[in-house]
Image (cartoon, rainbow, N blue to C red; front, side, top):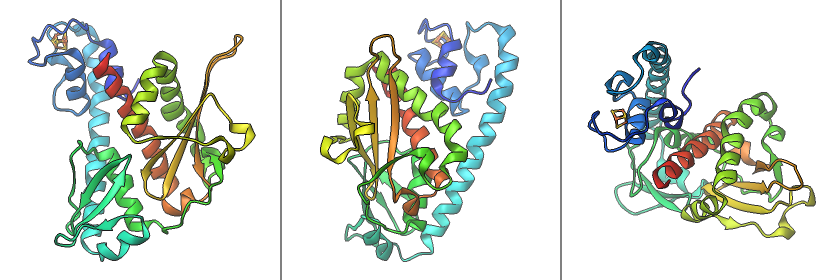
Length: 272
Ligand code: SF4
């Protein structure tokens, strides 16, 4: 088993919030373990017989973290070599008039990127988010959305990633929506989501809840949720504009979706 999120680490902890690891809660401790800042063995009450097996998984995980950090470093270097201001306009960002910095709105929040590739925002920035953002700025074609929604698997190259996308993005998001539907809707509001107007949605994807998020200015995501009914399970699917892969490659669209799901899981854990 490989940990995909702090939530999975949290599940194996005693959940007593005893503070003996110097963290106020087991959840905060699990986030630190996920980021390789702490070891499972630092929990005073975890069954020691399990630690060896789980630490092995975390070893593999921290090398993934290192790969991500290396990739981010490489992208920052590429940003420092381009004319950032000229890319800004075509990708829906703006010059903010300060030393070549640009401002880009992502999920309703403003992010700034300077000419050296440093990313800053009032909200906490994550590697999972920075990598797709830099790829969007560097390699996006700047195509305006066509207004035609397609599922992930119908994007060019989407079919080969679709199984993993369902497992790591749509299933966790469905669980969030099932467990706390009202919270899910309010979380969407935090990220400036807009309710999708039904006339713009084809009848085959009309759902009980349809919300559009704008992770990047030219990359909208439509989240559709069907509540459970008459013994049928609920469903949740993400749809993308037909042009999505012109502005961001499939690998980074995948990273964006899975990162979003994992961020929402963390936010929910903090509030429950
Ligand atoms: S020592 Fe273990 S049980 Fe206590 S707060 Fe930390 S993680 Fe939770």
